[in-house]
Length: 68
Image 1: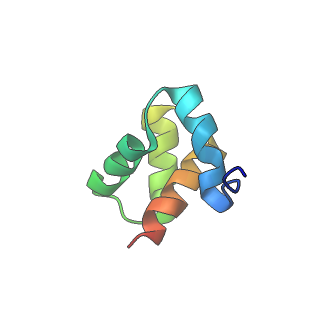
Image 2 (image 1 turned 90 degrees about the vertical axis):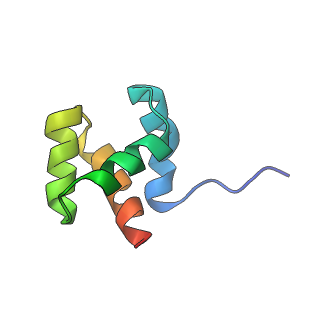
């Protein structure tokens, strides 16, 4: 039996790691260390400063902020 497929924001994680070459933990550490706190501020920051696409940035921010 195989593991269940990831759902929600985590379903983007394999493609994020493949496309940008950094582990998810590293992206989450970047988000946590940012002085920004609002969802869309963080999404826009990842897009402008790190070159992520909107969907990937949104998934990372949503999952990271949900941990708080």
